[in-house]
Length: 400
Image 1 (cartoon, helix red, strand yellow):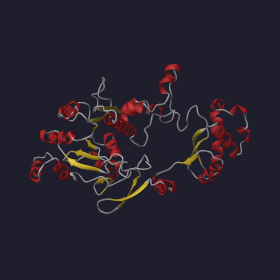
Image 2: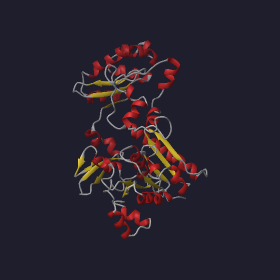
Image 3: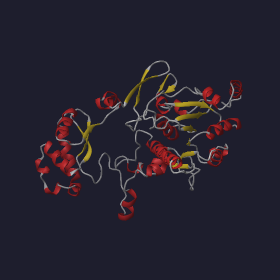
Image 4: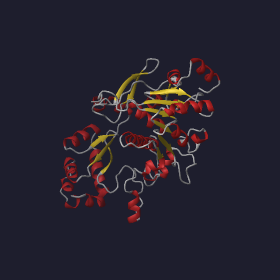
């Protein structure tokens, strides 16, 4: 019997060579479930994410989430002695994660061919804008561009306005999740099927593209190009966002046939509930505008809480639009441990998002928040055989 109380990735060693979002989010998930993640950062400031968005005492609050459970080691990848440190780490690692432009690591003698020769069991997750091959591979690629190329931006927003972005870096995050999936598949193949190490090629635009549902077959078979539709869910009715009397909004998804009938009964529209033409989604689609108007007419007569209470009573899927203040005080979030309480280095309390997914026997955990730059240099380099004197000399030369 194994130790069911140990983290599921205990004993897995990960070297993170990434910066900003896609690579670091990928390794963050592995760190949350017990992998030893050694994050390599440039000695002169480290990952730029340390300075992104809202700051507290000189450090990004995002950093404390994105780098939790990671060990920070400073290494200059552009000099031979720094490259040698990474090669030594890769020699005993299970996974290397990187999100540089294709070819960058090869210039530093740290590419897949070089590292896999040192460690044939190595798995390398390579996240980039366009992938490691193809005519666009050398282009700089950020998540915002990938979201456009992958088809997501075109369908996001209102039909009479330009495409809009989601309020988060969704392209990077989706790619990171595929990086984790690919790493776990490769790890299983290596450990269970007796396979060798391999690299996982995740292109950000392809990660976004994979989310686009029936976009391609609808165009190929019917010549249909999906357009922006605001808050509605085209072809699935009713499903939309509706205003309430107190200036708030409610999301309602009543597109199931039986739910639709309950919804119309709940708002006092028995005529619509019993209209045979509206009994199926196919009949409701041509009357989308009429149904949305009827629902909005009702929601605008009541405050949000009353609307939610009525819809909950009638078992109609619905919910308010949460902001950060709603999230951190919500009873369900709290009951499921999705708001964690930790401390910053100066002792200030900080709330962090809980860890997903939830494993029944071996859940993930936050062991520490994002570390100071180079906080684990002595520990990691010492384990590689670098003496204190050697570390001081490397630091003086700007290698670490």
